[in-house]
Amino acid sequence: MKRASIVGSAKIRSLLFSAILQIGDNYIIAPNSKVLATQREIPVFRGNEGNFASFPIFSASIPQPIINEHIHLSIRNENPVIQVDIVDVIGVSTASVIQIGANRIIQAESRTKHIRQLLQRETETTEDAGSAPF
Image (cartoon, rainbow, N blue to C red):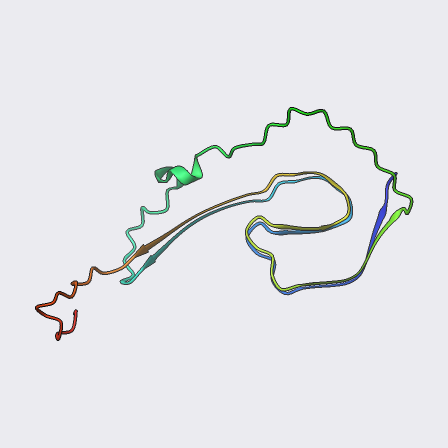
């Protein structure tokens, strides 16, 4: 039985980076986001940076659950309508899904590598405890 999705009002303040708002039925949703961010104290960019292949986090396989049990599912939708009065969301980001309706498959993936490159500071010792570290 197909159902209708009815939403009175939706207020989404921020929807970013492969995030999805789905109102209604869908078969498959597959958001995907890869992020490689480098933050430097002194902004020097060489032009050849940003290769996902350099970091194993982006090529490692994601483990999938193995289900060995037989699952019997019986669904009876007595009401042919999915009704939501108000949806109020501050933010949806990075391969996330907000859905009002039916869905068969959601396959979401988000991988992030954040690199911070800061200047090396001198460490304070007991001999120079009164001096500034710079």
